[in-house]
Image (cartoon, rainbow, N blue to C red):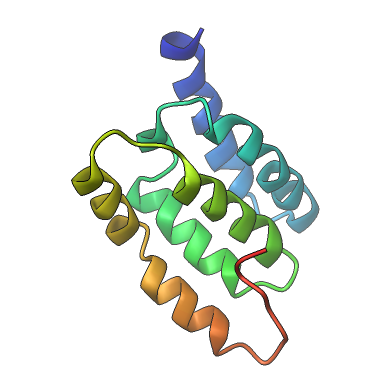
Amino acid sequence: MRKECIPQLVQVWYKILTCGNLQLMSKCLKILPNYIDWIDISLVTSDKFANLFFNFIKSKELRNDSIECLKVIVLKGMKNIEEKYQLLVNLKLIQIINSTLQLDEDVNIFL
């Protein structure tokens, strides 16, 4: 199932996350952590997904769900430390943390 269906499912997630319907986008972000832990991490850490997560942090409605997805990605076990480091760089986590900390609202990015 993973090799055949999951890439198609990820494409559907991307379409939902770019549809513009905040309620639907939020629901999609809420289910992503359930899958991130067991799918190929590269499917949700591409530049297009990294940019989505980065932009969602700026949205009050999508911020917490996006942060939860990023948390699950960061906590996902990886065998190679260099690959993990590159993953963190590709996800623009430093930019995300900095932009989140600059928001007017009280945000705890580590919960």
